[in-house]
Length: 330
Image 1: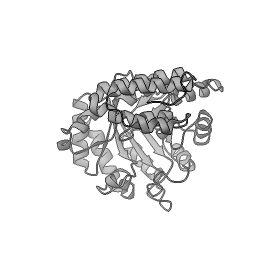
Image 2 (image 1 turned 30 degrees about the vertical axis):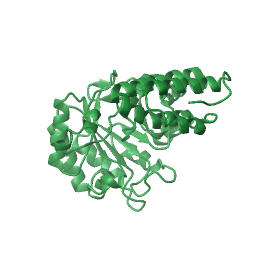
Image 3 (image 1 turned 180 degrees about the vertical axis):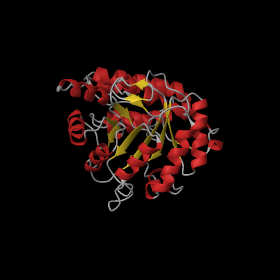
Image 4 (image 1 turned 90 degrees about the horizontal axis):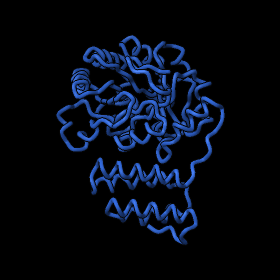
């Protein structure tokens, strides 16, 4: 079992922090369905911006048993340290530093994976954050800036020397963004170069692939991002496969519906009737994307304006899947 500071996790499967996805309701759902650790959406290191509604919501703790890790992003060591300390005061159990985000909006501020170009600055930020708090600090990186400068091993060594207690590595460079396939040779090399836990991330979308990546990299755990969108039960599937070598049966339509309804209710309760309905649309689309006539259904679903209408329409759609109705009505 992996330990994060004083906390022993129930397994070694992590939900990746994803802006606009891994909010409090989704973290609760993933935790209920087997994730050993979930990390909050990225929060800017500029605490003056924390008072807007969106950033306030990012700081609300989900009702889960695992440690509460808050991810922060920025390029100024002093601001990053202040942000970390403030999050500890607000009740965070740990801090995760983002040096892996490839989004242009983040790169323009020389944050996220842009930092991988400047190893000296990486060290200053890590040391500043670690020294500012009394809680565990982890780091999320990519394998390097571009294909010619995969410096993940060097960054990992700096991280360990700076006091980072856990390292997550996405198997692409900043240049790759999410294109092509993730590569895991660099992650394997990183694992061999440090003694802190290393978590492999990138394109993990099945129990079999999860097992192959663990075998190839010898990583201590796995971080799953896009593979959990619309399929948060992937954590339970992977955990079962790693322990038994056997696959769990596919979820029934009733089981899928129960998860979707629970998620919708969490979204409506967390964001309120208006924004809850809005955020629900992309999650429901993810849940249904491979099911019969889901495109037709989503065209109608996206026009609905109330929580009850969304709940009723999803239940009607699953009745259609079970053959109780002739149309995929919303």
